[in-house]
Amino acid sequence: MRDVIVFSGNAHRALAKRICEHLGVPLSRVDLKRFSNDCIQAQLLANCRQRDVYIVQPLVPPTQDHLMELLLMVDAARGASAAQITAVIPHYAYARSDKKDASRISLGGRLVADLLLTAGVNRVLTMALHAPQVHGFFSVPVDHLTAIGVLADHFRGRDLTDHVVVSPDLGNAKTATQFARLLGLPVAAGNKQRLADDRVEIDSIVGDVAGKPAIVLDDEIATGGSMIGLLDMLGATGCPRASVVCTHGLFAGQAAQRLQAHPLVTEVLTTDTVPAPPDWPQLKVRSVAGLFAEAIARIHIGESVSSLFDGVDPRHAPPQLSLTFADGAIEGVLA
Image (cartoon, rainbow, N blue to C red; front, side, top):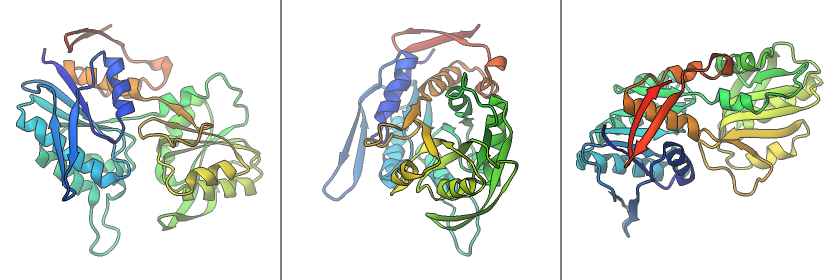
């Protein structure tokens, strides 16, 4: 079988290293330079000819720099005769720009998909797209992972009597329902209207939340506006406390301070799809490196990745891959 080669830009090398540890392959080196005219150059320092190349790069601030790094690394791999190039994008930032909801507005989600295809991507591996329809912007296979099983594991073994899972808006209610089923809890959702990038209004909550401890689940927390608005509404209903949970913890601006200062919040849980804030030791982070590593292994040996989605509930776990590694090559069978 062809060798697996993994590269990473500057966006989140720590996650790339953890993925490689699970795979048992080294993280190959990349030389990224910025010239005096602010142009970026990428040179891959490992042989890519007829090999399976995976480039790990979430689109996190500075997003435009990291997007350009990703495009240049993909272009370099294509020029080096890689057999297949997979862009591993744990956080696809432009998924929020997915529809024409104003006159003469750009569709960044589709444009970035077109750029990746033009650069030479053969496949995309991502997690928790803000808008599932972004999947359709690509004309190459897209494997869309979920972190709800990893996040639900954090709460297993606790006494969750009278708890309720709450989504900040109806758009995320389907994911919140799946998460609630894993924990055997009811679900509710806020009725949200976005007024600005960092300002939202939640005027009601659909579902029974009065006086109940809440587990508030969202796909992403950027400025924290939606989350703070929902927490305020929950407090008005008599909610005694709340756990805040998300897949992509960007915590831009004053989000971390606002969440830590809120009287309802007892804990904040996220994953390592994006780098964690360095000055928030109380933040709880669950790693999704194992999920990405198993997906990469399955892609490489031609096994189904969709079966990973069936395995978020341990009672319905998928067959496990039995992997062996030799000189960077992966061989595997389903047990």
